[in-house]
Image (cartoon, rainbow over all chains, first blue to last red):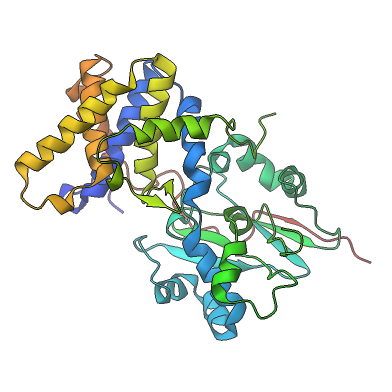
Length: 205
Length: 142
């Protein structure tokens, strides 16, 4: 990859994104405002933005074994089937949770995140505390989010990067037999797609 | 230790909602399930930066509101297809105007920094695919 960028390939969206980033950097550098104040305000709506697309994909995988298989083989292609794309040339992998394996996703260096599927990353995803501790003490981080799994479950932590982004295919909760895809999608939360929460069964919800 | 799953103060959301309600062309603000929604990460960043500046520095919200009205009017004056405007693109134009008039940064500072950011390769920090787990905590047997 060349380090010199070609202006003709920069989209209007990339340009405005860079402008927003530049403005924040200057304001923070000059001490006019702190990053934490901006993070705080973005936390007001970030949960509402929600992972609707990711939730739909998970619900489809729960009801359609063939789709599930395609998703686990090539998440990038399977997401396209559901009309979800938007990242150029980047690969996605869906990590399958089972009774014996639970997956968690982190970006150890920055905040690489499959946002077309998961919506906007929560602020904590980029906190050094999450990035560093998740690789060192995943069970401790899970506990902080209120997720306690049996000791027998193996925890795998995956590092998302710009080229390869992970997200979790959580287990379908008990008590949802015969539910429609739409009903199931309602149960799927952003946190369960990152792996810091499970999908609560409807009795407990 | 910073708590990870920290939630905003319960009073913050109704307060921010009330700021949004005071904005022009309210019906054009993208929403999902009734809540303010964003399609791109930069949109929520521009939004949050504006609200944070207002909250931290205490200038009247009307100052932003007026500039947003002006930015939308300007678009309308320059375009014939008025359905095509993007709320957050106009939002950013209004915020830039505010930031310049307040003397917080000049157009050339902003331009210069923008070019610097565009010149970095995309996600230059973290390019390579990591295909194995970075940590595995085996389950206890038996």
